[in-house]
Length: 182
Image 1 (cartoon, rainbow, N blue to C red):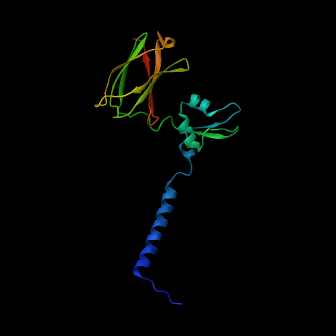
Image 2: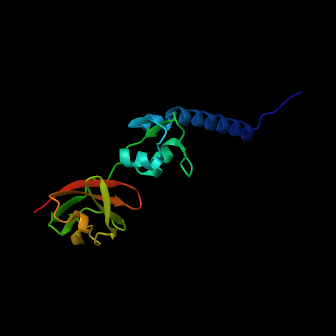
Image 3: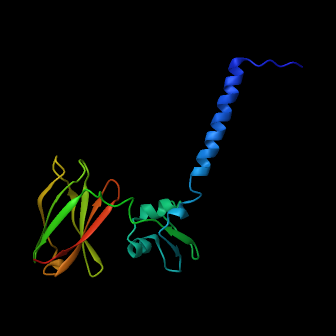
């Protein structure tokens, strides 16, 4: 049986060969697992939950779940090795500059370099307890914060210092700093 090869058939064969090689190259360049991006590995014990890991490592539950291919309700098994990814996908932008004035009953934030259209949750921490100060922090059209003031909950008033965190609600990026009483 005689087969004939047309220019189209040769072109299709070359294209298929090229695609197969490209796929092989892509697979070889992709990390084998999310484990290569772990900052730590946690071995699950009897009372561990994803929320306990969130509190212990400061990593959002969604990032832990993604790194370990967990689906809700994020059930962990005793002895399971859990990849703990970096705290954020790079943190808040390096171009963000923020300053604060902490008084006995409030904190005022001023800043610049915030991306447009991003919304931030502002939280304060003292003695291991988190308090949400606000859920709708936005910069102006120039990326600046113009003296945004938050009244402190009674439990935080008069504290000599507080940890203040801004969480980008769209990306889960988190940036924290310590504010000292003026």
